[in-house]
Amino acid sequence: MKTGQEVRALQELAEEYRRLGYTVILEPSAALIPSFLGNYRPEMLAIKDDEHLLFDVKLEGARDVDAFWRMVAEIQHHAGWKLTGITVPHVDTEVNTSGVLSDLDVDGLRRHLREIDLLSGDPQLRPVVLSRLWVVYIAALRLLAIQEGFERDGDADYERLVRAESNGLISNAECEEGRALMVLRSRVANGSDAVVALEDCQQLRQMVQRTIDRIAPVAAPEAALRVEA
Image (cartoon, rainbow, N blue to C red):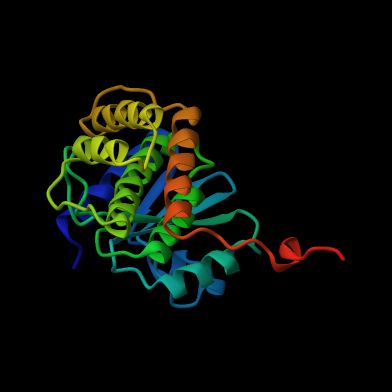
Protein backbone atom coordinates (compact mmCIF):
# COMPACT_ATOMS: atom_id res chain seq x y z
CA MET A 1 0.00 0.00 0.00
CA LYS A 2 1.31 3.44 -0.91
CA THR A 3 2.00 6.11 1.68
CA GLY A 4 0.22 9.47 1.56
CA GLN A 5 3.45 11.10 0.40
CA GLU A 6 3.76 8.69 -2.51
CA VAL A 7 0.13 9.19 -3.51
CA ARG A 8 0.49 12.99 -3.44
CA ALA A 9 3.69 12.89 -5.49
CA LEU A 10 2.05 10.57 -8.03
CA GLN A 11 -1.05 12.75 -8.33
CA GLU A 12 1.01 15.91 -8.79
CA LEU A 13 3.11 14.22 -11.46
CA ALA A 14 -0.01 12.97 -13.25
CA GLU A 15 -1.60 16.43 -13.22
CA GLU A 16 1.54 18.02 -14.62
CA TYR A 17 1.74 15.62 -17.55
CA ARG A 18 -1.97 15.90 -18.30
CA ARG A 19 -1.46 19.67 -18.60
CA LEU A 20 1.30 18.92 -21.11
CA GLY A 21 -1.14 16.96 -23.27
CA TYR A 22 -0.19 13.42 -22.29
CA THR A 23 -2.63 10.60 -21.71
CA VAL A 24 -1.80 9.50 -18.17
CA ILE A 25 -2.46 6.03 -16.77
CA LEU A 26 -1.80 5.37 -13.09
CA GLU A 27 -0.82 1.86 -12.01
CA PRO A 28 -0.79 0.61 -15.64
CA SER A 29 -1.77 -3.01 -16.17
CA ALA A 30 0.64 -5.65 -17.46
CA ALA A 31 -0.96 -5.36 -20.92
CA LEU A 32 0.28 -1.75 -21.20
CA ILE A 33 3.86 -2.50 -20.15
CA PRO A 34 6.22 -3.71 -22.90
CA SER A 35 7.25 -7.33 -22.64
CA PHE A 36 10.95 -6.47 -22.55
CA LEU A 37 10.43 -5.11 -19.00
CA GLY A 38 9.22 -8.51 -17.75
CA ASN A 39 7.35 -8.28 -14.44
CA TYR A 40 8.49 -4.73 -13.71
CA ARG A 41 5.54 -2.49 -12.82
CA PRO A 42 6.05 1.29 -12.70
CA GLU A 43 3.44 3.52 -11.05
CA MET A 44 2.60 5.72 -14.04
CA LEU A 45 2.56 5.69 -17.83
CA ALA A 46 2.29 8.92 -19.84
CA ILE A 47 1.67 8.68 -23.60
CA LYS A 48 1.76 11.33 -26.31
CA ASP A 49 2.15 10.44 -29.99
CA ASP A 50 5.01 7.91 -30.17
CA GLU A 51 6.43 8.87 -26.77
CA HIS A 52 5.87 6.49 -23.84
CA LEU A 53 7.13 7.70 -20.46
CA LEU A 54 7.20 5.34 -17.47
CA PHE A 55 7.61 6.63 -13.92
CA ASP A 56 8.76 4.65 -10.88
CA VAL A 57 7.51 6.61 -7.84
CA LYS A 58 8.82 5.24 -4.54
CA LEU A 59 9.28 6.41 -0.98
CA GLU A 60 12.93 6.83 0.02
CA GLY A 61 14.46 3.40 0.64
CA ALA A 62 11.56 1.45 -0.89
CA ARG A 63 12.96 1.09 -4.40
CA ASP A 64 14.81 -2.03 -5.53
CA VAL A 65 17.72 0.01 -6.87
CA ASP A 66 19.41 -2.82 -8.77
CA ALA A 67 16.17 -3.76 -10.53
CA PHE A 68 15.46 -0.13 -11.38
CA TRP A 69 18.82 0.45 -13.03
CA ARG A 70 18.52 -2.82 -14.96
CA MET A 71 15.23 -1.56 -16.36
CA VAL A 72 16.74 1.84 -17.22
CA ALA A 73 19.55 0.11 -19.10
CA GLU A 74 17.11 -2.17 -20.93
CA ILE A 75 14.63 0.50 -21.97
CA GLN A 76 17.34 2.61 -23.57
CA HIS A 77 17.51 0.03 -26.38
CA HIS A 78 13.87 0.63 -27.35
CA ALA A 79 12.89 3.77 -29.25
CA GLY A 80 9.92 5.70 -27.93
CA TRP A 81 10.23 4.50 -24.34
CA LYS A 82 11.80 6.14 -21.28
CA LEU A 83 11.87 5.23 -17.58
CA THR A 84 12.33 7.81 -14.83
CA GLY A 85 12.61 7.26 -11.08
CA ILE A 86 10.96 9.68 -8.65
CA THR A 87 12.16 9.33 -5.05
CA VAL A 88 9.76 10.71 -2.42
CA PRO A 89 11.44 11.90 0.82
CA HIS A 90 10.18 10.52 4.14
CA VAL A 91 9.74 14.01 5.57
CA ASP A 92 7.76 16.91 4.11
CA THR A 93 9.23 20.11 5.43
CA GLU A 94 10.30 23.42 3.95
CA VAL A 95 12.32 24.74 6.87
CA ASN A 96 14.35 21.74 7.93
CA THR A 97 15.27 18.97 5.49
CA SER A 98 18.26 17.80 7.51
CA GLY A 99 16.51 14.61 8.54
CA VAL A 100 15.70 13.65 4.96
CA LEU A 101 18.24 11.17 3.57
CA SER A 102 20.15 11.48 6.86
CA ASP A 103 20.78 7.74 6.97
CA LEU A 104 22.57 7.66 3.62
CA ASP A 105 26.29 7.50 2.97
CA VAL A 106 28.13 9.10 0.05
CA ASP A 107 27.28 6.24 -2.30
CA GLY A 108 23.61 6.71 -1.45
CA LEU A 109 23.78 10.42 -2.20
CA ARG A 110 25.51 9.73 -5.50
CA ARG A 111 22.75 7.27 -6.36
CA HIS A 112 20.15 9.95 -5.69
CA LEU A 113 22.10 12.33 -7.87
CA ARG A 114 22.02 9.85 -10.77
CA GLU A 115 18.26 9.52 -10.38
CA ILE A 116 17.85 13.30 -10.40
CA ASP A 117 19.99 13.57 -13.53
CA LEU A 118 17.45 11.39 -15.34
CA LEU A 119 14.87 14.14 -14.80
CA SER A 120 17.06 17.03 -15.84
CA GLY A 121 16.32 16.88 -19.56
CA ASP A 122 12.66 17.84 -19.12
CA PRO A 123 12.13 21.61 -18.57
CA GLN A 124 8.72 20.91 -17.01
CA LEU A 125 10.36 18.94 -14.21
CA ARG A 126 12.81 21.65 -13.12
CA PRO A 127 10.86 22.39 -9.90
CA VAL A 128 11.08 18.68 -9.02
CA VAL A 129 14.80 18.63 -9.88
CA LEU A 130 15.50 21.71 -7.76
CA SER A 131 13.60 20.32 -4.77
CA ARG A 132 15.39 16.98 -4.84
CA LEU A 133 18.79 18.55 -5.42
CA TRP A 134 18.22 20.73 -2.36
CA VAL A 135 17.50 17.72 -0.15
CA VAL A 136 20.67 15.98 -1.39
CA TYR A 137 22.70 19.18 -0.85
CA ILE A 138 21.60 19.52 2.78
CA ALA A 139 22.23 15.81 3.37
CA ALA A 140 25.73 16.19 1.88
CA LEU A 141 26.46 19.22 4.09
CA ARG A 142 25.39 17.15 7.09
CA LEU A 143 27.76 14.31 6.16
CA LEU A 144 30.59 16.78 5.65
CA ALA A 145 29.91 18.36 9.06
CA ILE A 146 29.99 14.91 10.67
CA GLN A 147 33.30 14.20 8.95
CA GLU A 148 34.76 17.49 10.18
CA GLY A 149 33.48 16.92 13.72
CA PHE A 150 30.96 19.71 14.27
CA GLU A 151 27.60 18.23 13.24
CA ARG A 152 24.65 19.41 15.33
CA ASP A 153 21.26 17.73 15.03
CA GLY A 154 18.15 19.87 14.67
CA ASP A 155 19.59 22.69 12.56
CA ALA A 156 17.17 24.16 10.06
CA ASP A 157 18.47 24.45 6.51
CA TYR A 158 19.58 28.09 6.76
CA GLU A 159 21.28 27.44 10.11
CA ARG A 160 23.15 24.57 8.50
CA LEU A 161 24.30 26.83 5.66
CA VAL A 162 25.54 29.47 8.11
CA ARG A 163 27.36 26.90 10.27
CA ALA A 164 28.99 25.40 7.18
CA GLU A 165 30.19 28.85 6.11
CA SER A 166 31.42 29.82 9.59
CA ASN A 167 33.41 26.56 9.82
CA GLY A 168 35.01 27.01 6.41
CA LEU A 169 33.15 24.24 4.58
CA ILE A 170 31.62 26.62 2.07
CA SER A 171 32.44 30.18 1.02
CA ASN A 172 30.39 33.22 1.91
CA ALA A 173 29.35 33.44 -1.74
CA GLU A 174 28.08 29.84 -1.72
CA CYS A 175 26.21 30.50 1.51
CA GLU A 176 24.38 33.39 -0.13
CA GLU A 177 23.75 31.38 -3.28
CA GLY A 178 22.40 28.57 -1.13
CA ARG A 179 20.09 30.95 0.72
CA ALA A 180 18.65 32.25 -2.56
CA LEU A 181 18.10 28.72 -3.88
CA MET A 182 16.52 27.68 -0.57
CA VAL A 183 14.01 30.55 -0.87
CA LEU A 184 13.22 29.58 -4.47
CA ARG A 185 12.76 25.96 -3.49
CA SER A 186 10.39 26.93 -0.67
CA ARG A 187 8.34 29.16 -2.98
CA VAL A 188 7.95 26.33 -5.47
CA ALA A 189 7.04 23.84 -2.74
CA ASN A 190 4.42 26.23 -1.38
CA GLY A 191 2.65 26.36 -4.73
CA SER A 192 3.76 29.80 -5.94
CA ASP A 193 4.28 30.59 -9.60
CA ALA A 194 8.04 30.98 -9.12
CA VAL A 195 10.02 30.10 -12.24
CA VAL A 196 12.91 27.65 -11.91
CA ALA A 197 15.52 28.37 -14.58
CA LEU A 198 17.95 25.84 -16.01
CA GLU A 199 20.77 27.90 -14.46
CA ASP A 200 19.25 27.45 -10.99
CA CYS A 201 19.32 23.67 -11.31
CA GLN A 202 22.82 23.68 -12.80
CA GLN A 203 24.15 25.89 -10.01
CA LEU A 204 22.68 23.70 -7.28
CA ARG A 205 23.87 20.55 -9.06
CA GLN A 206 27.43 21.92 -8.99
CA MET A 207 27.13 22.78 -5.30
CA VAL A 208 25.99 19.24 -4.53
CA GLN A 209 28.84 17.72 -6.52
CA ARG A 210 31.47 19.91 -4.85
CA THR A 211 30.20 18.96 -1.41
CA ILE A 212 30.16 15.24 -2.17
CA ASP A 213 33.65 15.46 -3.65
CA ARG A 214 34.90 17.08 -0.44
CA ILE A 215 33.50 14.20 1.61
CA ALA A 216 35.03 11.53 -0.61
CA PRO A 217 37.41 12.91 -3.26
CA VAL A 218 37.48 10.87 -6.45
CA ALA A 219 40.93 9.35 -6.90
CA ALA A 220 42.86 10.45 -9.95
CA PRO A 221 43.32 7.78 -12.64
CA GLU A 222 46.45 5.74 -12.10
CA ALA A 223 47.86 6.82 -15.43
CA ALA A 224 47.65 10.47 -14.40
CA LEU A 225 49.73 9.73 -11.33
CA ARG A 226 52.65 8.25 -13.20
CA VAL A 227 55.71 10.39 -13.66
CA GLU A 228 57.59 9.84 -16.86
CA ALA A 229 61.23 8.92 -16.34
